[in-house]
Length: 154
Image (tube, rainbow, N blue to C red; front, top):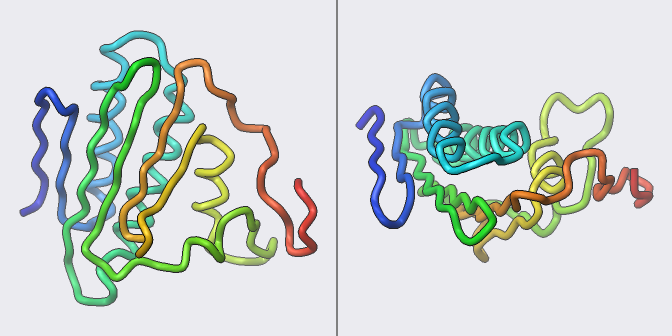
């Protein structure tokens, strides 16, 4: 499978082979789906979805070659709910929450970015399913929620 999507009563469902080029396509389709349903903080939604899809694409296969990434986007009351999953073993998300990587790190900022822009973020126990919620009137970025290495909120 390279890329497939459909809309039903449960929302927009996207499944794709974990290739970077499919992330742009999925984010564009999600933006179109959400924007057809009123005014939303699209920058925030696109950013958190892109980060989640990128993490699932890069890390979700546990080194077993090509894998599939799944994403479902639903409009629930006055919020956009996005669930991203991959077949990998997951990761220790508890150790990553609320932490900013060192300034010279080349990666590792995705969880913090999602924390800063999403109104709610929750993983399953294994860490291979992520649910993000962005409310129509939710806070935008700039609300510091992540801590630096010394444990201070930035």
